[in-house]
Length: 449
Image (tube, rainbow, N blue to C red; front, top):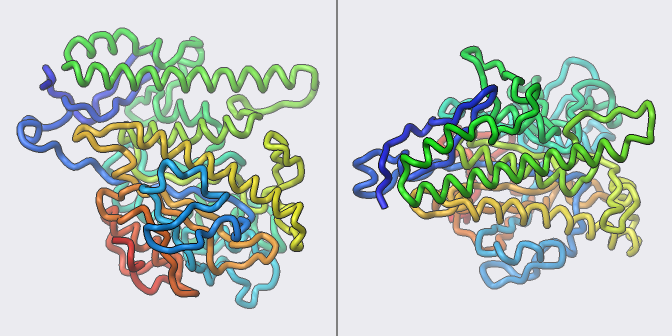
C-alpha cells in the first residue's frame, strides 16, 4: 500500500536529549520512483578480523565451485552458504618479515586492510598505509552521518611496544586514515549506541541528557514515534514497529550486560570496569554486530570494521570449555589436543559471523531485497596458521551480494601468492571507489562474478 506521506531519507525521531534515525521506508522513496521502481539501495562494506589464524584443515573445503561441503569450522554458515564466497590462496606478502625479523602478529595485522609493510617502530614514527575501509570512507562517506564505524571487543592502544619492537597501534588497529594515523575503535556498546542515536547539536556534539535523565532512547522519542506511525501506510507502520522493537531489545540487552558486570564486581573492591563493556564475551560480540546492522539499516554509515579481538590476543574461551589462552593455543606444535581447542575457538567466531549474516538477511529494503544482498562482508584472519605465523593462503570469506556484483555460493581457489590486496581493490571498485591500486595489489581479483 502506498504510504500517506513522503519522508526525507534523513528523517529522525527527536525527543528530550535524543534522536533516533529511521530505517529505509517506502515513504522515503521519491514519488516517481515509487510509482515505477524503487531506487536501488546503497552498497555497504564491512571487514571483520579474528586473531591468531585458524586451523586450516577444518576450514578449507575439499571441493571447489558450487558443489562443495562446508568443513567443520565453517559449518555454522550452512544457512548462508548461498550468500558466501570461500576464497583460498590469497596472500599478504607485506605481512611477512621481509628482513624485519620477529613481530609477525603486529605486522600482519597492520597489512590486513592496507596491503603495506609497516615500519618496525614502537615510537611515534608509525608508517604503513591507508586502509581499504578508510579509502572508501574518504570517497563515499559524505553520503552518511558517519563516514565509517570502527568496532572492537578489545581497546585500541596506539603507543607502546606490543610485539617485538612493533607499536601496539599495529596490532590493535586495522583502520588507518593515513599512512601514519591509526583509527581507534570503540569497544563499548553503550557508547556506540549513544554515538549513533543520541541528540547532537549543530556542531555535532553529543548531548548526554538522556543518560542524566536515565531514560531510554525509545522513551525519549515515543511521542514523535506515535505521531509518525499515524501518517504512514500499513507496510511502513509494520516496518517501523519491528525496527523500534529491535532497538528496544538492544537497549535492554546493553542495560542487562552492564548490570551483570556491576553485580559480578560488587565484591571486588578497588576493581573498576568501564561502564558499558560486558564481561560476557559472546554477548559483547553480538551487541557490536547489532550496532553495525543498525548503522547500515538506518544508512548512518556504509563502511565498518570489527576486530573481534586484538591480534595476538590471549583471551580465554572458558565459556566453550576452552579455558586456555587463544594465543598460547595457536602455538600448537602439531599437538592434536591444542589443535582441537583452536578449531573450537575458530568455530565460535564463525557462529558470530553467522549471527551477523542472519541479522543482515532479516532486514528488508524498500524494494523487498535483503540488507545482506547489498552488503559485502569480508571476514578473516591476518595470518593463516598461528603456529607457523605464515601469510599465504589466508582464511578469507566474502559474504553478501554486493548489490548484484558478486556470484556467491562458491569456493574459489586462487593461485598461490595472489595478493589479498586484489580483493580489497575489487571491493573498493564495487562500492564506487575506482582507485588504480591499494598496497601491493596487481589488479582486481578475478572470478568474483
